[in-house]
Length: 415
Image (cartoon, rainbow, N blue to C red; front, side):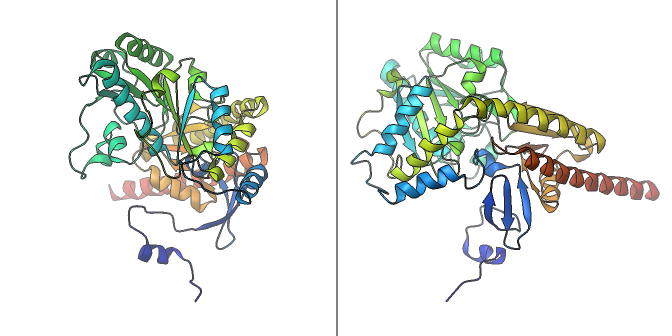
């Protein structure tokens, strides 16, 4: 018997750990999506920085279709051609010598943190096991990754967090210097705090982190799950900042929507994960790696990376103007196509509400904490798609301004 799929059915069959929007998207092309009712949306959210080449890019569809006719899965008892090709391409394009494939950012970070512990203990004994991370970071939802992230809202209620983790304020060099010692096995940083407001690191902060790790024999780990694969206008964020880590994690856009992630490491670091120390049943499967290989080939092009900066300028300028006209945003920050629109005082704490109003007007955006609207659209979003999305966002901003004025009028009458 056919089942009618609806948002109401979701409430009956899914674990209630999400609270998705009322609409159900069913089709996408480029930066446009359509829901069950045929309503069109402009996608400025990009599946949370995942759909770097938009929806259903023909080259990715073809890569998946071709591989699906050849080989789906063999497990890591064997290797496979797409995994080897993609690993080689990643090492050729980055500082890394070795690659470990996984399925998600959390898994890639889990591998990186386990590697850090193995490296620290292997080079400095049991005492060298501490991980230094920042407050308000985000590294995934496993117990290890929520313990490393400095956000109690993700770790509270799950029992004692994993020990040996120290948290410092982001971009605070003095605090970092005080935290890193001979007990430190790794410093873990997001080059841009994505989930907590789209806050870029300073060059000086990242450079000092590199120096401290070198001085104390610790690994420098960059979590590039959100900033990697062209998002900032360079293939990876470390290239934008000019600071090279020992280990880097990548997910989201590496598969452009197909589950794929990777931990990249130098040869010296990678040797600490010998046979049997870590693994993944589906990590590096042929389907995902075939898509990843095609995505990397398309993104790592001068025209695409240059276009990220051009699109940034167009979006940032227009968003600043919209924010000013309707008293909605007090600032627009970020790098490349990872943008944060900081809400003006009347809207502080209401990012989710603002995002819902945008959706009603046919444009998908994200929130980054309670005070910031985040945009992470396709790296190849077309000009007409940008302009259409901005027009819809402006209509949402105008409605929000009208709501605020009406509330102020009513409050004035009550006084």
